[in-house]
Amino acid sequence: MFKFVQKLTCFAISTSINIGVCLSVASSTFAEDSSLGIIMRRGHLRVGMDAAIGGPYMFWNAKTQFYDGFELEIIQEIAARLNIEPRPINIPWSTQPENLASRQVDMLLSAREEGALETGDSKGKFMETNPYYRSAQRLLIRSDGTQIKSLRDMIGKRVGVVANSGGAAIAETYNKNRGNAIRLFSSRDLDRMIIQLRDRQLDAMIVDEPVAVWQVRNNPNFIIVGEPLIPIRLVAIVNKDDVSLKKAVDKALAEMLQDGKLEQILKRWNLWESQKTLKSTKDLPATVLAIITPYSVYR
Image (spheres, rainbow, N blue to C red):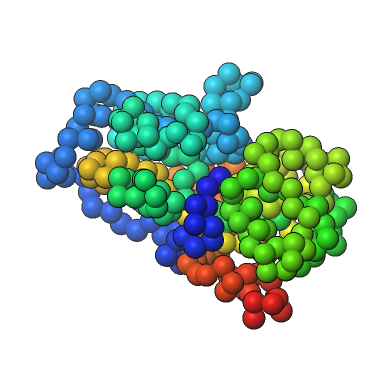
């Protein structure tokens, strides 16, 4: 959600959320490494997540006095299919990779984009599971701001983005080629920017699709407009040597897709409809923006 390290150059190489059919976890799998065997003997799967990311990923539900969210439900279902207990561990997003590398957790499932940890110091340290969700950046506006339909309509407008996010990368790239045409406001405080949008201090925001859907669900005066921008898949992350764990999680995800459980979870959070049509892409920023911004300077 929050890190596009290469800013629009590290996108998924796929055309669907098709998780595919994975190899079954047979006894020969366990011989590859001891990761799954250790977890099975322990009886619980430790998963690094960050509740500060907020709904609908994973968040603290004041009513139930426990965590909630679609990513939490996916973790619970994976653990159930492995006949072990799910144990979400709340860890700040930025420090999660080092917690995984030091084996304080077994896996990360926390709005991690495909390929995002294949750069810098983390390159070569981890493996990605098959995807569980296809995300994108969306334009969130007030329902009375319907003159905004695309990035071009944001010229001269006050637009909020989460710092270092995909939305920030899109807006910064657009401004770089349009002479700072968008009045960009970047912050790490998503809740504050939502209030600013509500109170007309911002005209629009560019945020992750799950966040946009969540805000519309909880704020009847907000709507989502325009096409999905820069689709990318979300994956769980394990240590590079934990082949048996990866295969077990991949198998669980494949089964969840095939028997409809993944659809059921995503529908409960209003996140399923986009999964049927949205395609992931890998392209240069100029070409992507040419597609999402008709008749732009990039053509």
